[in-house]
Image (cartoon, rainbow, N blue to C red; front, side, top):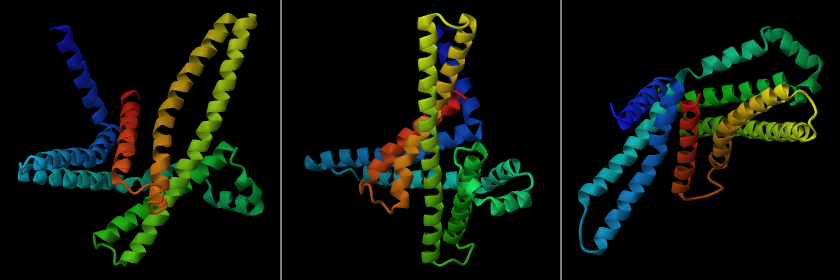
Length: 268
């Protein structure tokens, strides 16, 4: 077996392993969904160029429309994949607060404690509650659009807006946390540089800390790439399209997020 064949075999083996996971499959479908408008736009551009030379391209036009329909179907498939996304959120909440009633009473007695976002438990509680609202809203709006629930279009729209805004707030909070973590990582890196420059401390321990810091920074990069990609998209959707009007901008940013998600799944 040649070196090239060996590399291809390793790649395919890794790809099949990644795509067999929910994270990897979702990342792959994400790429397909957000790349389809760009592919269709490129095809229509070719049609336009041909038309300038008097050449008609009905087949290419139909194919472009098919690409868009396929992308829409893939997007809906991702929504269906999240049908049970509420279950891990509830599990997460119960792990944070094994005794929900006690947690509620504690909140009533000490309401200011709930504002302490510096507390990891409080921060995680906000996140999981926001994501629960997101999933409930997404499920209700999807069922309403399918006619399973007798919801008026206006009601579906309001539910969808609440859902996406909850997600947008979660993304924003996560972005703020990542910025705080980055400041901490930089401070630790500067301290390690100082210790190396002055020769202070145990060299072996410094090397171990440097290796751990490097791994933490890689994890941070992976999370930041996805989160800061979602930031403009969730703001765009939750604001009713206030940031831009060209749908291809959404596709480009969504494609970037998809690449970041594939990278995260690949290197997990």
